[in-house]
Amino acid sequence: MNNARRILSAGTLGVLFTFGGVGGCVERRVEVTSDPSGARVWLNDELIGVTPCEAGFTYYGKYDVRLALDGYEPIHEGRVMKAPIYEYPIVDLAATAVPIDFESVNRWHFVLTATEEIAGDRDALIDRAAELRDR
Image (cartoon, helix red, strand yellow):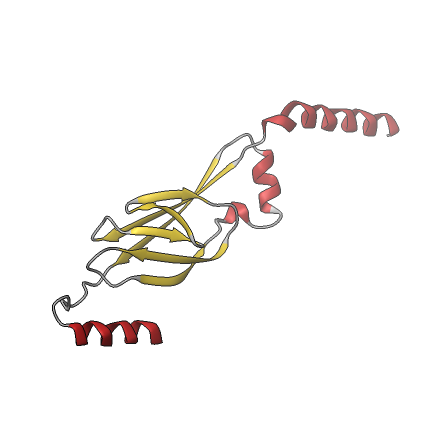
């Protein structure tokens, strides 16, 4: 019985050494699109590009997202990066041991609303600025 345990342990160690450095990895990305396209996008106060764009991220959870495009209302809201099942605790250990690369993509789409034309009316512009400040 003792001999069988040694053989099993040696076999287990052999498998770990053979596949230990060949574990898979996870590429995490967020893809941001907007209607219309061309909006600047900030993720946690870091400019990541102009829609359509994508960026890598490190952790799942809540992110602060801002979009801005001339002639359209700015968007500022929180969004959540959702983890796939293979990123859940315990399952992630098995997933990283398998020599397969995983890809986790969160896709966010935003619809921008056109602003009113107020460039020629100074009072309307001041009222609009006060309204935005109060938000």
